[in-house]
Structure formats: structure tokens, C-alpha cells
Length: 245
Image (cartoon, rainbow, N blue to C red):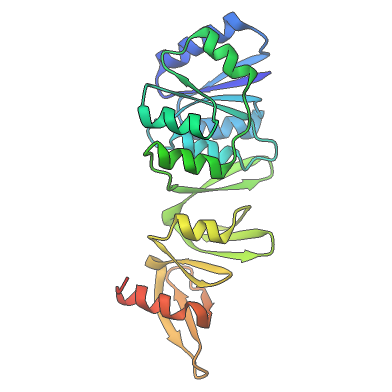
């Protein structure tokens, strides 16, 4: 098996590497010091198992796990964490693999034997129960075997078309395999639904225009796109623009 250790603290990575070398049975053991390095490695090398620190600066372990789940063949994930009552209860409730720091060899060997892939919905529940911020700051798009992180602040809107959602952002357009409904729930504070197939960033709306036929359109700042507003979502959009909600 190929295994990746992800932790922002070098001593923690060193301890896990030593334990894994004692346990054996692994073809290669690689390391990453942050979430972005972990994503790049997972895209390129496709490890079988990731030992993933929960709390890291930048991308948290929960967020990294959600992103690597978008890979065609995602690795199994085992979280590592210092003792935290809420995190431990959340992992156990959702049957998610975890190890308490400092990690013991027997516990590590047992966790590796039972490592499994974790669904995104379960990860969200874990984050909520563990009182971690489950709202992502980036969206992850897959380009072939590579993962591309798109900052939420760079996104103009999402549009749905059958299976995929298109992300319109400052760098162009990207496809993601997520539902518009889930995106609308997660990013409700900053994005507003204007159509069953469209979710737009409120801060990039430059104007709401009404046609002679009584229909509404939104004109987007910077990108210049004009999107149709459905009759069903027009009242909610107008309330948001007026600051009534």
C-alpha cells in the first residue's frame, strides 16, 4: 500500500513515519505539511490511505477529505487529532476512522486494517458535531487527474446542467460533480438562488433588470454575464438585494 501522512507539525509526521516503518507492509510513505500539498500528492500519486490531521492552518483536514473524495478513485482516510471531546464523539457517531495523538502503534495498525472511504455528507456531519467550520473557502474542480482549487471569493455563479454544475469564476469556467441544492445550503450567506439551475454570488450582482414582459434578469459585475431569474425566485432575490433578509 502507498500511504500519505498529512500534518502541519514535523514531530507528528516523524512519529507516524517511524510507527509505520515498524508496522511494515507499505511500499511508500510520503508526507505533506499542509492541505494543498496533500491534494497535489493525492492527485498525482493516488495513495491508498491518507493519515490526515484534523486541525491545520489553511485547509482543515475535513476540507481536504471532502476535496480528495472528488477524485475518480479516492483514498481511504484516517483522521489524527489531539484529544477533543466533540471531535471524538463525532467520529465515533459517524463511524469515521480516527486516531488520538500521540498515536500508539497498536491503534495505528488496527485503524489501517479498517481504513475506509468517507462520504462527503458524513464529513459534513462530523464537522458540525465536532464544532468545526464545515463551510468551505474553496471549491474543488477535477481536471483530468488533477484537482484545482477555486477560491469562493473568485466565483461569480454556479449553473446546473443535467449531471454537472458549471462554476463561472475569475479564471474561466470549471465543471464540478456537486448538486446545486447542496451548494445553495452550504453557501447561503453569500450566494442567492435565482433559478432552479442558477446560484449567484450576491456581491457580484451589479443590477437586477426587469424586461417589458415583466421578467427579471441579473447582470453580473466583472464577468458581464446576464442570467435569467425565474418567477419563483424573483421575490427572494429582491428581498436579498434590498437587505430585507
